[in-house]
Length: 137
Image (tube, rainbow, N blue to C red; front, side):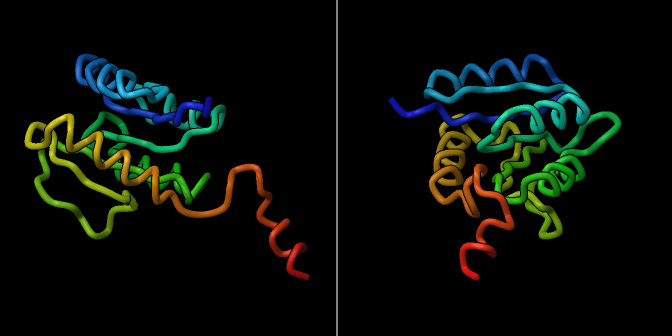
């Protein structure tokens, strides 16, 4: 049996977070949740996260800034930005995908997650960045 993909969901609204976690877990994903940027960064550092789903508008940190910080740690991990206030994708965003809250169905979120996990970029987490350089030398 292959290991479950791990998805980190960040939202300051507990009810929204709990529904999103339920939807993803019933499709076989392992879901970590965080209400703040600090919690998200701690979970991101501790575990092997395969995908991030972050709310744009949160107290003390917006989702775009949080995704920027997480991508500095592991740039190959895809991220989805969700927003109830913005209806279009900001090209300056570091997120790999954008979905408007309330205007997108759970099926759209699941399809976006599946697509991003299939085309997840970059080296495997176990590969040290210098190992590729030494192997080609």
